[in-house]
Length: 146
Image (cartoon, rainbow, N blue to C red; front, side, top):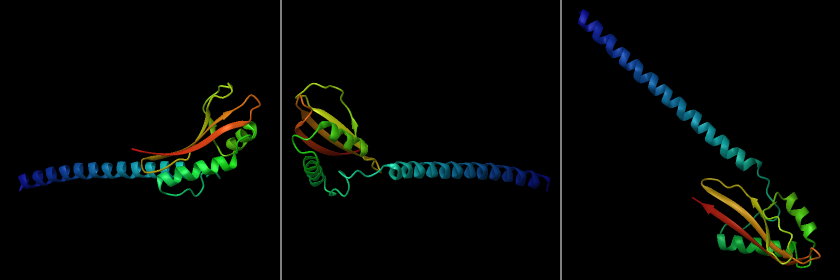
């Protein structure tokens, strides 16, 4: 009888250890899931959609062509680089080069966020003359997935 009581206590202690480990594992899983969901929400909810990238087609080739056409229509040749720069800043583009040399290609980039292992980037490349007028411009929209 005494042996049965000690065996029962041993089984209860083992069960208690297993249950405490299970509760800890479930707690870690819940915290991890909540952190991931918050991260995805914060990235997707704080990225403001730019007029140049809004409602692009879903297919990559069509998306890139549509973005390029929008860029060329919005900033035609002989447009002011300063006016373009102000507009791009409002749309959260960041100029990535600092050279002021004429006839050199410059570019600005916007991170459009993304989710589920993909990042979306809008890029605008341009050249300008000594009067800071656009002489060439093109847009590219990149989808980078893991």
